[in-house]
Image (cartoon, rainbow, N blue to C red; front, side, top):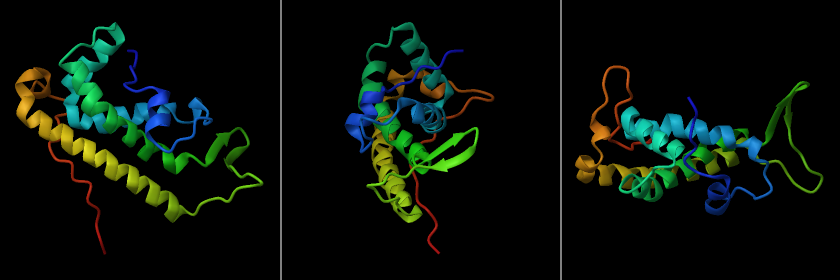
Amino acid sequence: MATALWIKREDLVRQTALGGNVDTDKFIQFIKIAQEIHIQNYTGTRLYNKISDDIIAGTLANPYLALVNDYLQPMLIHFAMVEYLPFAAYTIANGGVYKHTSENSTSVEKNEVDFLVEKERNIAQYYTDRFINYMSYNQATFPEYNLNSNADVYPDTTADFASWVL
């Protein structure tokens, strides 16, 4: 089955700190990962599959189009960055794992990358909260949201990303 990515490269470049000269092959898989893990977690399997099938068929129309544009794409953009940032400085090739360096730049520390990931996660949480609030009042408009069964992913209705503080 083909996978429809719900955002384009330009969406990440325009709406995040990702530079326009970053090779698409370095981050495209993280869009798919974020979409399948995070977005499907909040839409549930049936709604996720309905939207993906409509995108592949070129038939995505309102109200689903508005749902994707207004709620799901902003979530996906920032969840994709959450997934990509920890790997951004590395390349895995035949010779091993390499960390990129440039003669006129300085590598960032792990805690700085963690800070960026947390900032992106906070933004994703904001959009996720908006989606959950919207769906709580508009479930009838999207019947697939509540049609999950058996091994399907049921929609998570909380956006709690709180971490443990020791």
